[in-house]
Length: 292
Image (tube, rainbow, N blue to C red):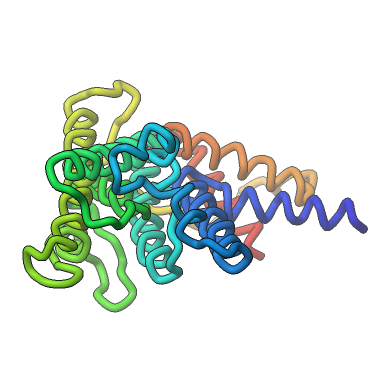
C-alpha cells in the first residue's frame, strides 16, 4: 500500500508540480514561502529570519550574506505577494516554455532577479537606504514578461474575464501594476526603492528577449502564433471495403504516463515547436486518455 501511495505521489509531483520549468519555479517559491512562514511563527526574532533570505539594505552587511542575491528572488513572506507573483509566473512562464523552452525560462528568471538585486545595491550605494531589505520574485517575474514581450507580443491568451488578449497588452498591465503604480505615494522614497529594482528586472528581460529574437540560441524557433495543446484528429468514415483494424495490445497506465512524461520533458527542454506533428498528436491522445 505504501509503495502505491509513493508512486501516486511521484506521478502527481511530476505532472502538476514539476512538469515544466514554470511549475518548478512556482513550486520552489511556494516551498520557500512555507519555510519562511514556519520560521516566523517559531522563532523569536522575525527580522533575523527574513534577513537570511532577503538582500540587506546595508551595503556593509551584503558580503556576509552574499547568498541572498539568489535566495531573495524565490522568497516571499506575505501570502498575497506570493499569490500575485505566482499567477503572473504561471501565465508568462507557460508561454515561455512553449516559445523558447524551459532553460530560457530559468535563464530569464535568474537574470531578472540578479538585475533587480544589483539595482537595489546601487541605490543603497547612492543613498543611505530606507532600512527595508529586498525580498520577492517580482523582479524575476517581470523579466519573464519582458522576454515574452520581445518574442511573442501578438500571441493570444484566453483570460477568464476578458477572452482572448494579446501578450503585449497583458505585459502592459503587468508593468503598470509592478513598475509604475506606486505602493505609497508618487515619488515617495519607498516607491523609488520598489520601482527601480522592478524596472531593472523588466529591462533585463527585454535584453534577454532581444538576444533570443536575434538568434542568440539557434535551437529556439518561435512559432508565429501560440500553439494549442494539440488538435483532435479528424474522424474519417471507413469505406465499404475498409479492412477491419487489427487488435492492439492495451497499454498500461504506467506506460501511458511514461510516454506523456517523455513528451513533456521534450517540450520543457526545447519548446512545443520542437515536437513533430506525430508527437503533438500523441501528446493530445495521451492527455485525453489520462484525464479519463
